[in-house]
Image 1 (spheres, rainbow, N blue to C red):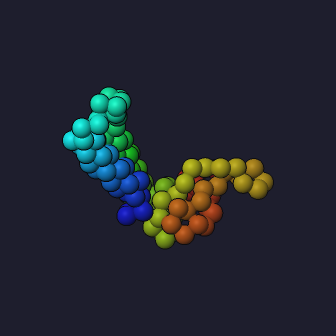
Image 2: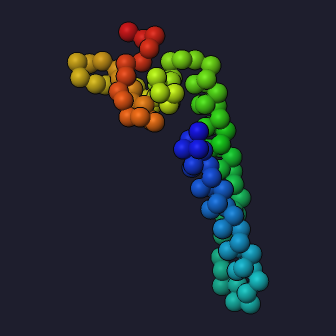
Length: 105
């Protein structure tokens, strides 16, 4: 689960660093040369982190409700891709095994 939420944590950390950088730039007397467009960057990164968090939460919730999205090891299966012989196969994101999606022919 920690691996699934890693992009969310990275986006939150980037938003925090960006907010510190923007506040430091405002405190400097030379900040008149700083473009005004940088002020929205922390907010955009925070919205991105929220969207990533919601997407990951929805995917984990969906995987828990249906067994079709889980590997035997308990990891999430990736998207279906064509394999040998024309079968659609999924790769487990945790252990790397390749599976035919259960419940589909």
